[in-house]
Image (cartoon, rainbow, N blue to C red; front, side, top):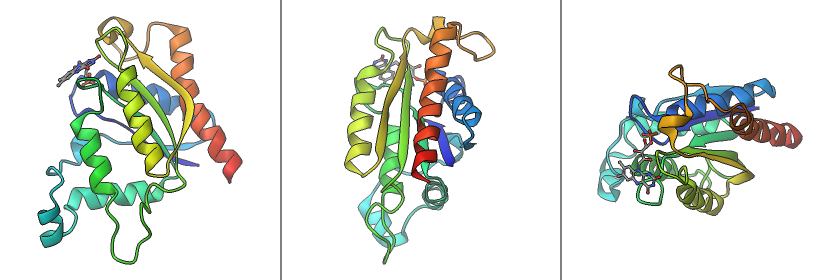
Length: 188
Ligand SMILES: Cc1cc2nc3c(=O)[nH]c(=O)nc-3n(C[C@H](O)[C@H](O)[C@H](O)COP(=O)(O)O)c2cc1C
């Protein structure tokens, strides 16, 4: 039950980086082994087919792809940019999706289980963006659990230590991690 957890934001004070830690804690409490990463540690160019043809995957895309291959579950906290997925997240999904010669299509996505959460300073908490993230993952053969949480007005929702003020909301976010861990356990 290995789960890879990350936010779709690289920002140091990212609300989504705080939120993913809470979802990850829920998965750990449910017995999963969670690897929490920061996409800032994997900078990569925008996907470019010419670059891929000449040089293959950039080093950081290879590292990220290896991590995806080593984990059966994904937990993602996705910021909403202009009603949709962040460029950082989409670019990472795109590079990682590229198959090596002889490798099956979407080898690092097919059969995975994912859970989604989001945080935004807006009133909808990034809910509209999650619709797109869910659709993208579904189309690349990832099973996305129905449980999801969007934390609105993030600037008011978190304590300075990164925990959520609302205990019920905290339990819901942990519940997304737990849902992924529980489904993975049933699949083993
Ligand atoms: C380019 C851009 C577009 C944004 N569009 C939205 C949006 O459509 N809906 C929303 O709720 N917030 C939007 N925001 C505000 C983000 O919710 C806010 O910047 C949030 O802090 C980003 O997540 P992070 O804290 O994890 O980096 C946008 C921010 C940026 C930079």
